Every structure is written in structure tokens, then in C-alpha cells.
Length: 238
Ligand code: ADP
Ligand code: MG
Image 1 (tube, rainbow, N blue to C red):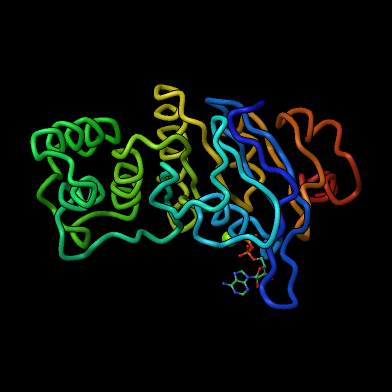
Image 2 (cartoon, rainbow, N blue to C red; image 1 turned 90 degrees about the vertical axis):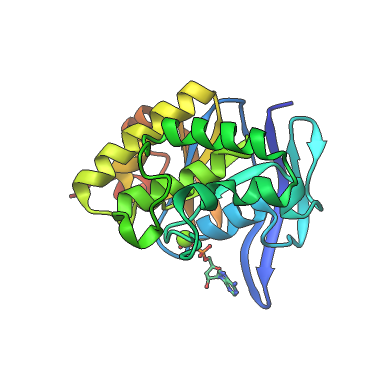
């Protein structure tokens, strides 16, 4: 069994079936990107993995454990969203420490773990700053640190770079990938940006209208598109 196994997962909002009987596997330490046009179901799928969306059918297994009906807090999953959901009235260090405090981790351990992830995302010196004093890229690094500090089994990233300008985006792509490799962290990254997916991923799951239409390495998807949709989306007709 793979580290992450999803079987026959189905999610509906009322009459709208976002995906039906979707399945895939992800290996430990793999960086997989859900790539596809707006509205195809990427965020819904990611939120289902996180437990933020109860599913209507199917199973999610992580490391041999069936997590399908676990609440988000039980899943040991870290998540970063497009817009930085930081607490505005807390400092960088307090934002990062928040999850550990909720789990009643001892203060000395919190201090050590927070310092470690602050170094990892290169925010040393910003510990006492507030979110409004930071750039967009720095705020996303705080959000990333906050996701990492709980030592998640899986990191889920929903378009974390989309709101940033091009130069910062490129730097953060590399930084996320470096950290992910260093921690050997199983990661599911969502984007609608083909270039980002091509550069960052071990494997791409290309989605369209709630289906994974092709999965494979960036090279395989680019050089052997399975159909017209994939070819078009990967830019072959531009
Ligand atoms: P993507 O992230 O690929 O842009 P989404 O997962 O956000 O796509 O949306 C997929 C479909 O699910 C869309 O039709 C969207 O309207 C619908 N959807 C997403 N979230 C909700 C929700 N909370 N309530 C109702 N419909 C939703
Ligand atoms: Mg989305």
C-alpha cells in the first residue's frame, strides 16, 4: 500500500457532484501537484484530504490508517491556503506557536520547535513582528512555518503562491521544494499554473471537471499528453 491511498472518493454539494469515485496513490516523500483549470475541483479534493469537507463516499488512507472520518485535528496534516490566514493580533512567533499551544505542548518544547521552523523558512529576526509588518511572501512563509511546526504527515498547499508577485513566487517555489526535500515531506500542491507544476512536481495529477485525466511525471505529461485537453492545457497549441 502507498503512503496515501484514496479509493472511490465522492463529493457533492447538493446537486453538484464535484468528483465521483476518484482514486489515486501517493508515495512517502513525494511532491504531487493537482493541476487543472479553475472550478475543476482541486480545492475541494484538497479540503477533503484535510477533513474540512466531509465526503459522500470512498476512503482516504494515510500510512496504513483509515482517516476518512477523522476530524481535521486528528489527521496530522498541515495546510497552507492562498490567502494568509494569520491572526493579525499575534506576532510571527505566536502565530506559529498557536497550534502547539492548543495541543498543550510544554512551553520549552514550543520555543524550540518554533525556532527550528523559523530558521527553516528563513524568518529569523521577524519573530516579534506582526503580520501587517510583513510582505506577502514573508506572510506565506509564516503560514508555511505554522503548517510545519506540528510535524505533519502530509503537507497540503492550495495555491499558496498565486497572490504573490512573480519574483517572490519563483523564490518561494524553490524554497518550498528545498524544505519539502529536506524533511522528506509527502506534499500535495494545488495550482492552475502549468509552469509551476512542471518546475516543482515529482508527479502531476491533471484534473478536468472532477476527474484526474492524466497522472505522471511533468516530462511524461508534457511529451505524451493523453488527450486533446491535456495537450491544450499544457500549452501545445500556444
Ligand atoms: P478549483 O479549486 O479547482 O478552482 P473548487 O474545488 O473550488 O475548484 O470548486 C469545484 C466545484 O465545487 C465548483 O463547481 C464550486 O462551485 C463547487 N464548490 C466548491 N466549494 C463549495 C462549497 N463550499 N459549497 C458549494 N459548492 C462548492
Ligand atoms: Mg481552488
